[in-house]
Image (cartoon, rainbow, N blue to C red; front, side):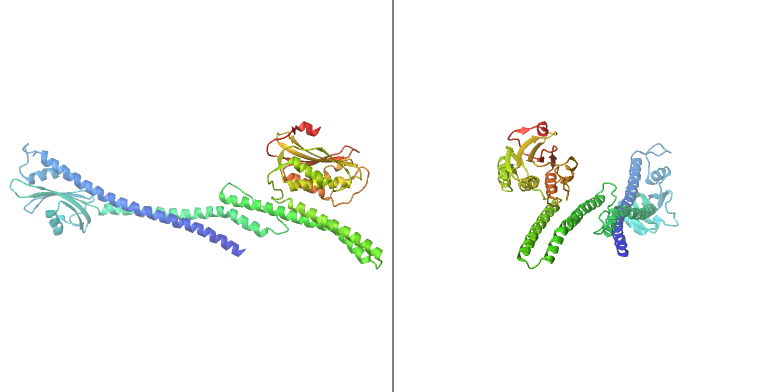
Length: 492
């Protein structure tokens, strides 16, 4: 039990483990991609802000006028003074008017932009060198990354001036990292929730397997009635259904085996007792020995027949008991049957009707059933009595084409109370004349098994004192090639 529990836990842990590994990989990829997108978005926003401010400055240079004179600006210093006085820098943004003679003219810093104490752009010699050679760039400062752009003015006195726009991205990147950390925390919580959910779901999924394992452990050769309750229509639940079906087949097989053993023990006990008793009492007298050997031989023959019949009934539960090999010509089949039965005893044999056409049947099993019916008729008639064989095609009440094979005798008949019971194993009917007949009572059970294996039936009609007619009726299949009678004619 401990091993089984450990195995079930191991299976459950493997399922949960694989689910968590897959989910963790997916969430990890999501976090990495989101961080990359957020940082890329920070850079894109900073670049757009720089580009926008430079475009606004260029438009002001082209169209702006000095509010003091109402005319165009006379120098770059006045232009940048007016322009910057009207600007409000965005968060993390700095705008700087830089004069060619080396003095910083004007500066505007936005909200959350590093102060002079944190970083003084004019004191950064490396940045100054970049500004003189490049129009834009990315520069690492003590206050973080700075994305900048500049435009150059050429005033009338020939001294170049510059307008510089820069955006610090460190805090925006810090916000992006904070968002990523929050996303990672949510992903971790989701992973833990998924672990709990997958543990529960894995238990539900493996429940049919656990039930199958428990049922298999509880099943013994003495009790095959254990079944698993199936709920839902999932594939795993289908395992339980298949297992139940397997148990049904095993139970049927064991029941057939047990029935065979019980039947054999029941029927063979008497002849074995008779044989043993006569052999133990057999003397030295030759006549007595001959009589004893004759009786033993007779009992052994009866035992052999009982075993043969029991084997036939045991095979009746197998799916290959009847094999429909192909269409059988019923006219020739009937003539062959008639030739066989006439050699079975001294009776007045008659052939009243021959079916014309083909039927899809197992010819060997149908022959076996008919010979059993004839043998039964022989046991209940005397020399000179009439036994009639008949075959014909009829149409059933549902329109199905049927083959009927009937054996009629002129014996004492079958009591009404016995007409259903005689088809059971070891059942003996009580003839009208009160006589008893030898036999194990398996012949008619074999006929019933053959009929049902074909999807048909066997019945007996026996008016009091007027003999009996045993009719084997099975689906014929195929196409009608001869006369087919209606169901009304069949019952007439």
